[in-house]
Length: 297
Image (tube, rainbow, N blue to C red):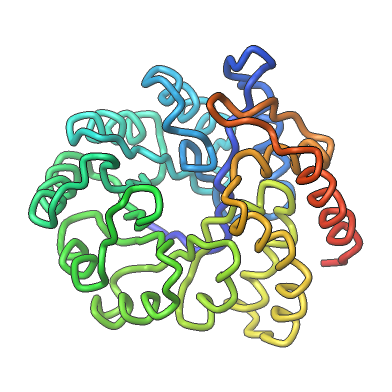
C-alpha cells in the first residue's frame, strides 16, 4: 500500500440552515478539493465538527465521502470517540466502506493515563486492519502524547502515522528519530507547515485547504517534492496571514466554512454551540482571501 503523504484537507461538514447534513454540498466541495490538487481528504476530523455528529451521521459522512472520492485520492476517516468500543466500531465501519485510513485522537474529557491510553490504541490496532494516524492535540483532548510514547505506539500493528498538533516543532524530528523513520509525521498546525516539512514531515492536515486547496497543496510539492525552498518560502509567506488567523482565533470550522462560502461553495452554518464568525472576523477573512486569490501557483 502506498504511504500517505502530501496536503490532506480536513473537510468541513456542510449543514443546511436547519443544521441537518447537506451531503450534496459535501460532494461538491470534495470535487473542488480534488480538482485543485489536494493529495488526500479527511472527513470527521476536528474541523469537520465530528464531536457534534451523531453516530449515524458520522458513518453517513464517511460512506458518502468514500463513495464520491471513488479512489481519486486517499480518504482518511476520523474515528475518535470517548470509548474504546465506539472507536473500534467507527474504525471497522470506515474500513468496511472503503476508507484508506483512520485518524484517531485520544479520548477527550476522561484524560486516561498512559497505560490506559496504550491499551486503548492496542485494542483498536489489533481489532481493525487499517492504517492508523494518531492525532496528538493536547489543546482539545487534554492529553499530550510525548515522542517516546508515540514511538512505543508505533510498535503496534497499523500505527504508522501521527498528526502532530502540539505546536512544538522539535517533535517532528524527535518522532522520526525515535521510530527509525517508521512513523510518517503530518503537521497538524496550519502555521507550522513549512517548518515541519524542513524537519522531515511528509504531510499536512490542513484547514486552509478548504479555501485554497491549490495553494496549500503546491506548498507541499515545492518543499517536499521539488526541494525548491525559496519558492516554498515565498508562497508560505503569502499564505501565513490566513494560516495565522485560523490558528490564533481557533475558529477552524467557523472560518473554514465562511471562507469556503466566499469562494462560492456551500457549507451552511456551523452546528451549535458554534456560531458563525463575527462581521469583523468575516471582513478580515475576506481581505486575506482577496489577497491570496491574486497569488499565482
